[in-house]
Length: 178
Image 1 (cartoon, helix red, strand yellow):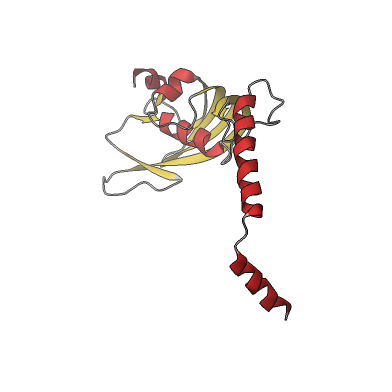
Image 2 (image 1 turned 60 degrees about the vertical axis):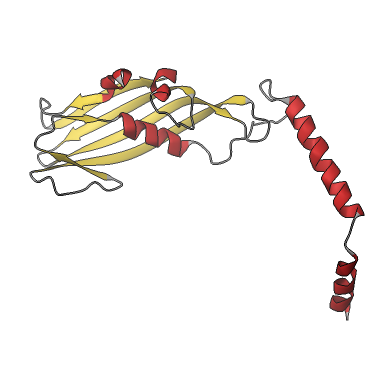
């Protein structure tokens, strides 16, 4: 967690207005999160913090490359990504208010806001649901041996299925024709 200290912003000394923060995210950042979908990458984070009297608006812009594992051949490949998100941090006197998706609550006892978890969430939400090499079989990082094995096993099961049709289906097919 020591490497995440750089992502803490001490807001008590900031004047009202806009403040720009820039961060670089790499392997060390992702190593701090145990079950991260992304294990490596090189991204730049631009954070525009607008401090007001009762709240802060944090606008994140993240751009760069992350290393993903192909869901088809299991090989690693680079993926270009861009993401933008906004977070509102509301100042409150009481401790009884709770955070929501877009609004976090900052009590009077807090003096800084840690944005590392928000950066992590934005990156992971920007990762595609299905990770497949852009050109399977022709990308240098693509695992051709794995693709051959998949093709071998999938082709065999399709042939066996078509050869061994259940005769009960023939009866049902005849009913539909009548």
